[in-house]
Length: 119
Image (cartoon, rainbow, N blue to C red; front, side, top):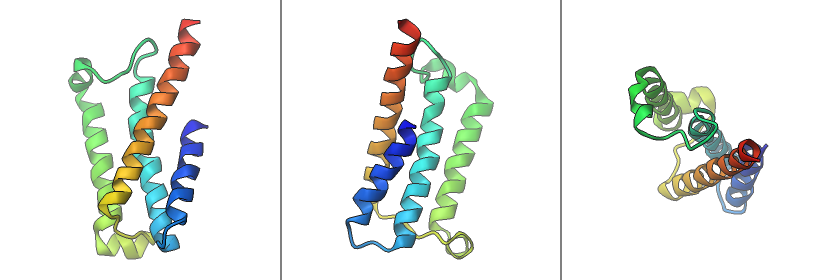
């Protein structure tokens, strides 16, 4: 629910600009992908944040995250993928919004998990 609400916030922030609908949809699509990848850190461990040394020992997980990010970048920046998926290349400022929103939503979910499992 938190990631969904955050996606709506990203949508509203970008909708207030002069970006095309295709651009805004690409940004929200990218936010959802990045937020879900970051959510992995909240579900790896129930008692703490799941980004520690042990994360890098799970080569399959690291590989899956790297592949997912590469595919997302391809969907956003490769012209034939833009045509196929209806995406648009994102600007650096939009990436900042996406990453801030993804980090904040990850932290909020982590906080709720901490409260849930410690009380």
